[in-house]
Length: 206
Image 1: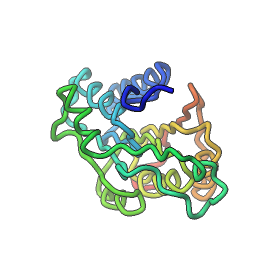
Image 2 (image 1 turned 90 degrees about the horizontal axis):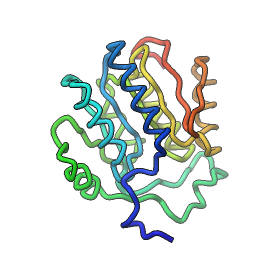
Image 3 (image 1 turned 60 degrees about the vertical axis):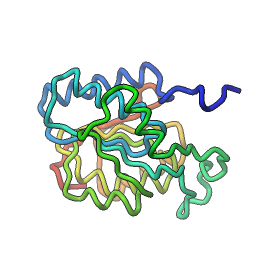
C-alpha cells in the first residue's frame, strides 16, 4: 500500500481533468457568468487545476471556491444504508494542508476562497453568490443532496454541474431525488466515471 503522504493531490484521471478543462473552455467561450466551486476538495488538486485554468485563459473576473469540512466526510443521517457510512477512511485533509498544497504552485491568492465547515452549515453563507461551474465531490447521499440544495439555484443558465462520485450509489440516489423533486430533466452525460449536465433554468431557480 502506498503511504498517504506519497499520494498525489488529486485522484482524478487524465480524462476527468480533460473534462474539466473542456468545461472551462466552454464557459469562457460562451461567457457564462459566475465563479467556480468545488464541494469536497480533499487535498486541493482540483482547486489548483481550476485556478491555473483561469490563469491560462487570462480570466480576471472569476474566483474559485473551495468548500469542505476539512475534517472528513460526515456520517449520513437520512440514508443509513449508504455504503459511505462504512468507510474507515473519511478522507480528512486539514485546511492548512490544502492551503500549503496550493501555495506550492504559487497560486494561493485572494481569488481562492475557502468555505470551511460541514455543508449544512457552511454553504448557506453563499446565498448571494453566482456560479458558472459547480463540481461535487461530496461522496455521500447527505452531502451531495445538501450541496445541490444550497448550490444548484446559484448556478447560471448555461452553467455546468459536474459530479465526481457517479459510481457511488448514494451519490446517484441524491442526484435522482433532487432532480425528481425539482423537475429537472436535462440530459445527464456520463464520462470517465463522472457525470454532468448543463443548466437550462435561470439563475435563482432549482
